[in-house]
Image 1 (cartoon, rainbow, N blue to C red):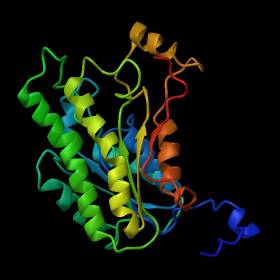
Image 2 (image 1 turned 90 degrees about the horizontal axis):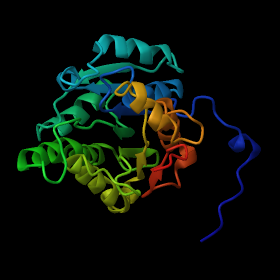
Image 3 (image 1 turned 180 degrees about the vertical axis):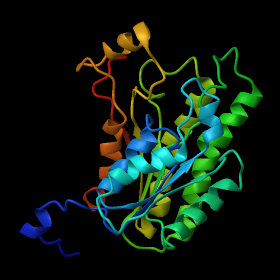
Image 4 (image 1 turned 135 degrees about the vertical axis):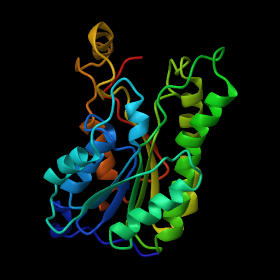
Length: 277
């Protein structure tokens, strides 16, 4: 096989809109304080058209609450890098086994019939416990939302997208395999661990279609769920003395969606700012 030529000087220069013309679905984007919103803004700033999935009832039931979808949309549109790109949104309860394929089809249709990038950011919060507390209902609920729906989203994306370079899948894990674990959130840790474990198998399965698959562990991120002394105690465990902010993992995820990251696949990548466990 002949060696690839060196990049030309023009190829070495960075395109300010490296995702111009690409389309993306970001799940779990109900709140401006969340990672999904930050990822959508980065993708939009890089030139992509983005469809934001939300499930407002989930966040309404949490202590932090939900934003109005139109406010989230407006914030992402403010970051738009390409005036020709589109920013759209729609709901979906991904605990429903039919919802992932329906969501992918709806997003692709809304974005012109094609979907290049899938960022599966959503997750079930709460409804969990320690080993002694966890029960079958908790395990089933986290399985349905945190793992089954992600695999079905990836499957639908792969079935819809024609073979060719530029396909991207990014899943999210939570550092459950790193020292200390998550002994108070057994159901969540189990299902997020499953995504980390399946990353390489999915990347191998989809390589022939030109789709890369990677998983990001964002570490502790300030998404407005903790305050006071507990917040300060976590901040002190970062060398920089601050929490990760939603745009910290968003920068990594947006880069993974670009052509620059085309050689990165099958990896579980920690973006934790040196967090000391």
